[in-house]
Structures are given as C-alpha cells and as structure tokens.
Image 1 (cartoon, rainbow, N blue to C red):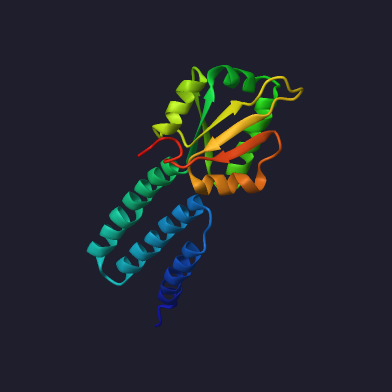
Image 2: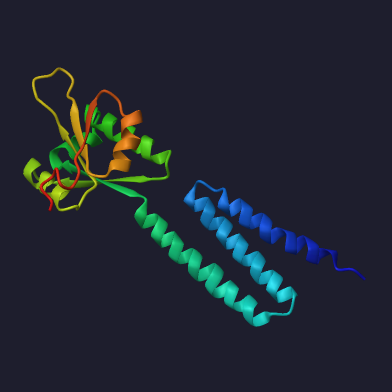
Length: 184
C-alpha cells in the first residue's frame, strides 16, 4: 500500500517556505514560519526522526517564532517626540490631532506603530532628538497663522523618505542627520 499522505506532507514544506519568502507583512511571515516549523516537525516524525521532530517543534517553531515576534514588535516603532501641551490638544478636535492621525495612517500601511513621547518644552524635545531617544519630533511652527503648521524633523533617512511622499501640507518635513544635530 502506498502512503499518499507522505507526498502531500512533503509537498507542504517547500510550499510553506515559498509562501514565507514572499510575505511583506512581518506578522504574516511569523505565522508562516510557525507553519513551516510545524510541517517540518510533522515530516520528521513521520519519517521516524522523533528527536529531530521534537527539537524542530520546540526550538525551530515555538522559541524562534516567540523571539521573532518580540523583535518585530519592538523594532517596528517610530518614536515621535511632542511637547506635552500639544499632546493634550491632540486629544481634542485640534489641527495637531489631524497631523498625528495622518502620521499613524502613513505608518500603518507599512506595519509600523507611532508612539508619542511627551516632553515638557522644546529644548527638552531637541535634546531628546540629539540623544537618540526619539526618531523624530513634531512641534508647532510659527505663530500668527490662521491654521497652525507643524514642523516635523526626523533623524532617520528611511523614515524621511516614507514621510516625504505622503505627508500633507499641514506639516513641514525636514531631515537632520546625526552630524547635523551636533553629534560626533
């Protein structure tokens, strides 16, 4: 008797690997990595390599997916420094809220999270950017205008490229490298 299910299980492994490679969403890739590890463990168990199957299930699937999930979750964050008073305004119907919502939507498309970090004043905000506590800052521009315009400064060129293509006219976007900020 031929065990046709072995062909099916064996075909799942390269199929899962191909699907894993073409994923653009890192969270979908984590799920596919878990499926690939599960299929591999099942294949090893069916062929009689129980020790390899157990190792693959524990280390290759559970541990690696957990560690990758932690790494992906912590690395896909843009920390944006804001003045605390403006953060309060962002909770009400205010132009700053529109800017923040637009930034969230831009980053959501690329599977990034926007984390707002409040600071007491502009000097503290500038210092946080220099000391690499935040990836960018957003502050109110010149007063006296009917509709306030906000200045957004980022220190990572890739974030600048992402924002440059999609940010609206309510934000003046600029890029400052570490050396421009006074770093050595």
